Length: 269
Image (cartoon, rainbow, N blue to C red; front, top):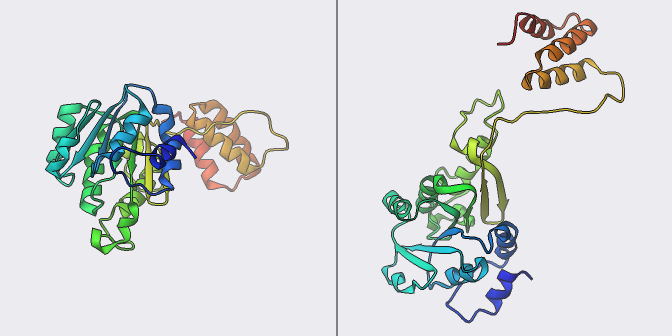
């Protein structure tokens, strides 16, 4: 049992509810942010118990912000915990939040769980996650529940949006036919769990494939083609040309190899 679950089981503070399997997810992704001056926002205050849990777990340097549509939640603020009243389905709420607090190290969406709420919160606040930070969306099983606007493979659900994020993670690679966008350039990792998605945000550069070492057997045409491709990607055009020529010598009828040799002999584009 981790510290968060231990806190939860012995909680004498305000009411809090969490699915049991979430605690391991939290510990896995949140541990490195403890005892640092991090800024965390959680949508869904309820009785304020989870905000107290985060305050205890992350330590006194953390700034904890809770957002809820219920104005009664405003009285739950305390030292180290600030409460903002607003509708997470309204983009204006997120604009005001960013104007007041700036960017966040961790965003936790444990709000109303309706599709318009989850999708709007992601679109508005994922850009407000700092590089090196996390975006965590909870209770994604509501994407399958009609009461929340969900349904299996129903357009507009958060799960369907999350599937598009997987595509965008791979937009670098032709012939995918995808446009490289903000998600492609910043989503370092997507971690899917039962009802939870954790997005690690980072600076993602154009992927480059590398190689090292010496061949253990004679290189085939396929090997030479692949190594030459990596040489081109790394800007080693002379090395690439040599390998493509060797491959063409072994497969003189290969029109694609002939074109690659011709292109490199005329100079890199």
